[in-house]
Length: 388
Image (tube, rainbow, N blue to C red; front, top):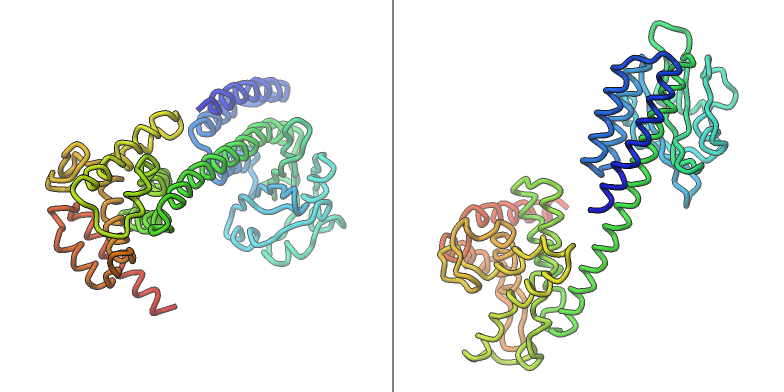
């Protein structure tokens, strides 16, 4: 993605600024190494919580602070919320929100200026409910605004200098330097989120076009997506794998856009000729996705979801593990929903009969491992529904 190039350039500039500030204040070369390591992690991840955790850990360690936290500004509500709060009191802190201008952190966020408080508990601008809630005596506290192009995005705060009365100018210079990296991380995480939302909306708009052509299967893509993601969770797939699986499942029938309405909307079973036509939809879907650089990574789930584990499916006649994992998962979810959904020419099968069919064809039509996880997922949902 082009966004990574932007992040890399921005971080290089941030590190140069950090180098100048730290050298001016006789900082240690180890600090520069720490900042460099942080920048590498930022360019390899867009998970805001992970990025902020890395930055806060370095800030706490390098300033020799007892604990610390990072607040993010909620522009819409004009509030601050805790993105990272270290220490055993962190969970309670994350439940707390501050208004802009409220307490030390709120004042720093509103004014965009740092505060180095030597006795935070007795500072009249500090919100006492927080210290009382977490039962932490707060003596020295250094609070720095996280700013991007003069706009305050959040606040970086370290609390209680170990073995010393208060934080000094070197600590402040270091936090100002590292807050630049934090600002870049926050801004680019927001940018990524906006891009991701646009991507997600595009995918769902495409899926809606399928429903519009085939009203009898309206909601099918949504249900197949839900089943597929639940199977993926049962398999402990990573978050990025689950996200890709979700998009594949949403678009698994996108190729039906290229199938005649007279076939899609037929109120009787398809004849042999019509069935041959409908078998083209995975390939048509793959060709549609090939035209988009951002959608190419979803092709495997769309193109191969009608392959069978024993090699007798359609597409390319793939079998076993030759069939991509996403397609093997979607195949089970797709078959279950097809069996349980009413069609004009037949009533949907019951859950029990559909599960019997899925297990009956395990090892032939479906990957036995996927079926095993599907069974476990359905059993868990059944238990959860009874508990609920």
